[in-house]
Length: 340
Ligand code: BMA
Image (cartoon, rainbow, N blue to C red; front, side, top):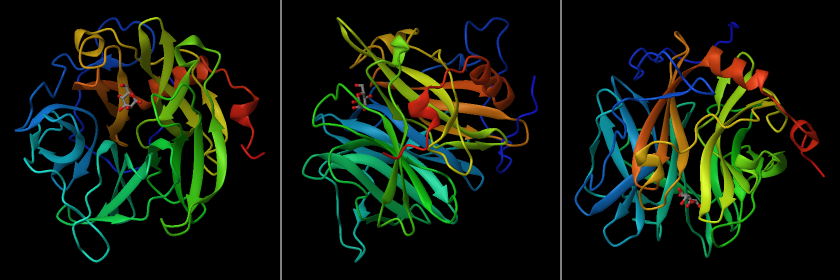
């Protein structure tokens, strides 16, 4: 085993189960009590999935995609002592504008939650005369102030890096179309102030590996490691019964993250369990967050399952980085800087 380390704080309370005796394929194993969030988890909310969590003080906090009983998705806050059992707020997050007036999105889904310096940012997909990215900031999880939308429509799957790189905020996103987009590559954009975004770079595209041959999209916020940024993302294949969403892994250059150093040719996790194969949209595993402990190298991956549940899976930084490197296939569109 290599000596790869996570660069970041110790999180001793990271949820964890040891690796079972036999794990097929990549060294990622599911929590035995999955799913951790079941159906009808809160009043007026039929399903929670594709959600993001992180440590906060002595506990854990999260932003959850709640599909209301009228079918419209919004973002709800949740808190937990152990990052496994969650209590959800009954009301949606009450976003305000910069004058503190109510400013709710028309709908909001697939939130990510990332702390950069002392501010927590929520990044999600919303209507901006077409689906695009919304962003809000908070320092106390009481006031959630929406800031400028970073991109024009259509765009989805945006996630911030957890620190500035070369003095700039960095965001991954996936330009798309107005429907269930049949294409999609991951791009990188930078900003001096979280308002103006530019210097766009291509990071990586769908690949010729069949499990990610239709489109890909950013997942959890990249994890800083001694080998580079460890990115868990989703890769999509098409079948005669629709899309199948698997979890992939790549390692991006620390200083210039549009350069992919390693990219795993195999999926790390694919729908196999009943809660991944069966639900509102079958065959979806959709990573949106990790909780990770720099001290032990433990990583807990949170993923949406079948657009219905939240699943939890585990890996260790050294094992997963070794696996990605051993099975890495990178092509020119991955390794180049991504500017044309
Ligand atoms: C994508 C997004 C995700 C969803 C996935 C599978 O386009 O809408 O929220 O999990 O489709 O339905």
